[in-house]
Length: 225
Image: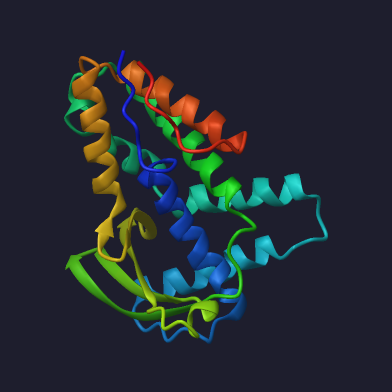
């Protein structure tokens, strides 16, 4: 059976890392000039996440668990998972879909847990927002790495797509330098399914393997045949 080789720990890892970068960035940020409700949501939640990360009065395992709960509350994991599954969700059984969503969530959790302490001292600025449709907004931010100033590194644009769900905002996708990562993941999953007879269970198992590799600190997943 062919195993699709994703980019290092896949684009999903980059997406979760982007969220973590944004949260940790406020350690050195200037006050964000958030004017719209969606912008305020991004700014306020970044500060909430930072408070959790900086609470060293509790055991690390507890801090990680609280941060995990915070991020899974910030993002609509099931919605993202179903989007990345694409057309296969229409033919998969309810049990297969639930198993895939659970594996997707576990992989996402493993990714951001592995990134907790890797980003600090960066500046995040909310630069504006644009409405895709009523209740669907893209919030633009700029991530500035102070260590890159001396070599002329340009700030990285990290955009958050947030929607209103039952009266509150949730993040449903992240764009890094113009690349929407949910769409990238959907395309990679589609390629995997095409190579594996549209077997959602195989994709679910592959995500489980990737999660184990992330937690073990392994390198880039390799193709398996």
